[in-house]
Length: 466
Image (cartoon, rainbow, N blue to C red; front, side, top):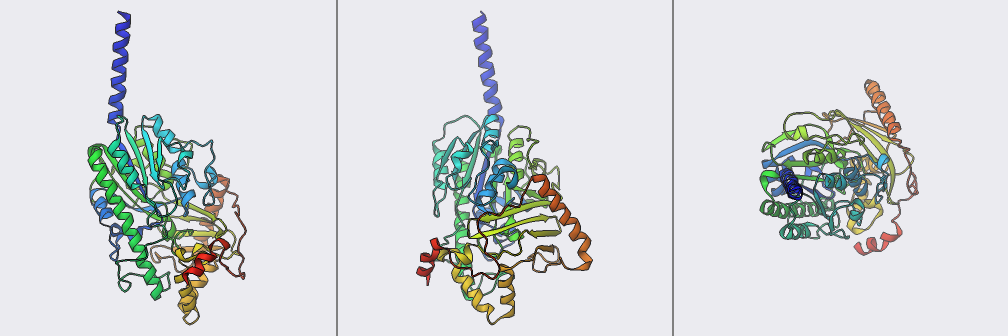
């Protein structure tokens, strides 16, 4: 009798566990690589086609003020997967990983009963297994995508557990397609760029890569809608940082840290938008809360689940972001504070010359169009100012984003803004102290006045492009 009672009890307990698991929503997170928000139809672009992103925006909630913690691949993704800023998780320069003892997002979700899978570039090249996903695939180099593996996984999946599926496409990361259907005469060159024929040609190639990323999103959406219950599935679409274009990736201007974020799912109003300020460190606690858990209190991120439900129209009043560098190509530590209307940037070493893969790398990275900028600078004063601004920066920058959304006019030396400058400077200093951010310089910098020679590993590629 006792054994029969115990068996019935265990059966009921098992059924209850399955019922709880079945009630938990599936979580699908789709990540593009090197995609700024302004190059997309849902965010107002008229010269590039992203129909699947637009469709997602029509069905869900669009965040207009979403940011990343850092504008290079590995630190940005480490911040997402730990809920901690780079100085606290240990992944500061690009290609680095967070400390092993830090609890990662998969572990939080696994504790809630989730199967957590990652396909494509979700963490970083080869970093997926380090984060503890249940299934990992498609992390190789080049213009790969995890879409095919993710679709195959969904088609074969038998598990009764709720699913947290992360899918990363490498688009629109370089190398961009050689051929593009976009018309160079029709593309819009932003005012922070030098408008040359080669710049327009390369921008069409970037748009072709953006469209490939949109195609990948469409494939994942189709598979998710076929294999997962749409009434119990959240879909997140976002990007790790801005485009590999001057003043984008590796920069703390909005072109580098402001990213798309569109979410659809149960309880989310279709075709809605919010100006709530959120950042990638907030994704971890948000996903945990959606999965039925209590958001951890000992991380930097804060859940914005209430904003998804339309219960709140605000989230953060200020966003901090950080960049330390990308190997020897880019050695230029920067910190910033972003509010709804203002941006403060602290260039920790203004004696360093700013450089990236674009002007120190090879053919695939944009050297051809950047050379056209330098040629234009020899005869055109505006082009000369833009090239100079790219290479040499003051210690402090202050921008009125309402009047100057492209961050072209530095107000740091204007007396009328001295109080605001001092306040934002103090906040960044205090935040760095709280984060134990030492402002570490990784690798050997290029100093102002030194020639920005091509790096040895890229010289052959650059010569081949001539």
